[in-house]
Image 1: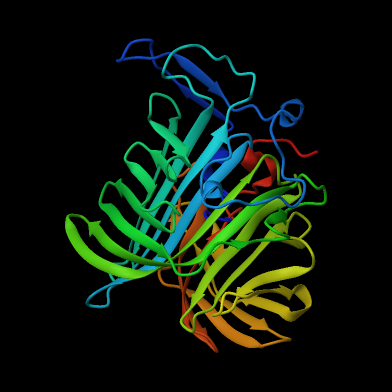
Image 2: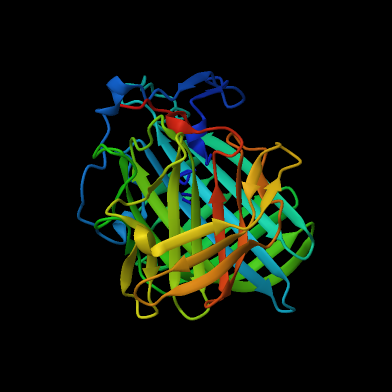
Length: 396
């Protein structure tokens, strides 16, 4: 989304989109550089970027990498892991890319660049009752941050790193660190990318360009080392990955969104997501009357119609940091073909990213009922309405 969704980011820091203006003072020397970075996505500039307006042709592994002709993009990983003694952890690691206006002053300094990057990294220590999170950003100049698909997929922001370990990019290495925690994981695809919406074209609004290009990798076998305050744990489990790119999606009637990525123990996965509107209504991702996306154990997929999908909140949690009140438990019922009933519960109540540019809740959840397993939830707009400003552009 992910990283919601996700834009997550996305949809979202999430959220580089919350940064409508970034200023960095640097000089032309190695010690200082002077630069002003205006993230202007005013309406007259939007047509200078590509937009998601309909289904596209996909090509992997190239599409695992960047799409710099679009204004926004993110690579978003979440996962639930355990140590050999059964201690549970969750993590989120997202890198966001935002393009500068095409007519930004070019210049010859190596510090100049046409992209800005932001990273969000969080770790949930369930047994320890700890949630650690961090946000970083950098201009894509002088090698400080960037994204590439050649010779292999590589996305980085300083020492935060997502790098392919084979030519197909089906094996990735994730490395991230912050004060008190770090990860070094190897992820391997158990299932291939699944296109979201209509052939990867995911509608978010009434206009064709209010959409993203979006795919998920719903299950990645994950193992490696997680370090907390100097104590290292060998961990293994499963992760979910979302990748979206777009230029304009949300409109001013959007308050926020709820997004869930669920990995069931029976070999299936499910994604749920909707936008919450000012008038209390909901707008589901992808269009076409679909409320959820179910991936069967054999890799086949089906969209669950809104008429067959029912979800109710079973609890609330109020943040001691921001004062925002979030849903804190859900009951889900899916009717129709292969009916299901299950509950979702946070593994830790306090998983709010309260020190980021946009305050939101993103954390590990458990699944119980007709199916069991673990997943991640992303809840945005509960601290303050997001609307179009979250993405730094105007509503059409």
